Each structure stands twice: as structure tokens, then as C-alpha cells.
Image (cartoon, rainbow, N blue to C red):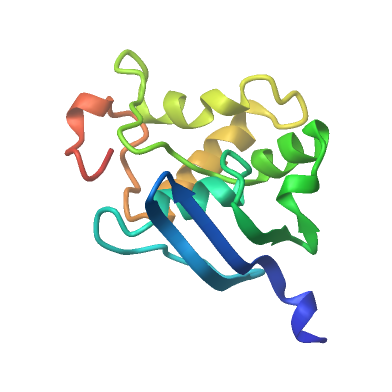
Length: 150
């Protein structure tokens, strides 16, 4: 298997500025298929900008963000929506619905997916919670969790 078949997302010399503030300067970064990758850094270092470029919410000023070899900027609406459906992202400061349990909040984006049964949606929620060390919180409400847990 060649290296390129392992690459899921590839940043090639990506630049992004907001006025005179240069946030991303010539970023070369590869996310490999099948690996969990953490984007970590201090406030203001470009983490959110990087993630927004990955899902096509921001376009780089220069360079390319390739997803499975295709530039995100060149994706049509259907391709971009399909790509975003494969991604999980939460906006900074994003909130859950206070009146819904953690399980209901997690499966809410899947409410229109008729190809996934209710029990499978619950299993997906359990799996995702176990990934982040929050097993056993399905029946709790957001107010029952600490800010970090939310």
C-alpha cells in the first residue's frame, strides 16, 4: 500500500489571514486514515481555523486542503455536504439542548437518517461517549455534566 492511500486529509502549503493577522502560514499537515488525531494548542494558534478549512467553512488564501485527494474548495454542494456528514465537529462554545438527555443530544443530528435504526443510533452514541471516557452519561442532562465534559 502506498503512502497516498493512507492519507485522508492533506494540507499543502496552506495560508489563511484575517486582515493583517496571519493565522496559518505555509501549513503542511497530513491526517492519516484510521488514526485519531488531536489538534492541540494555545488560544489563537489556528486550531479552529484549521478545522474550519477541513470542513470547507473557510477557504485558504493560498495552498490546498485535500480530502481523499480532492480539494475542498473544488467540491460542489453535494460533495461538501457528504464530506461534512462524515465529520464530527462542535463549534467552540457550542451548546447542547438543556431539555434533552446526552443521548438525545448525540443522536439529534441523525434524526432524519432512516437508514439507521433507533437502537443503532443509541449504540453509536454509547460508542462515541466511550471514546471520550464518558460512558454512563447517556441518561444525564447537560446541566449534570461539568463544562469540560460537555
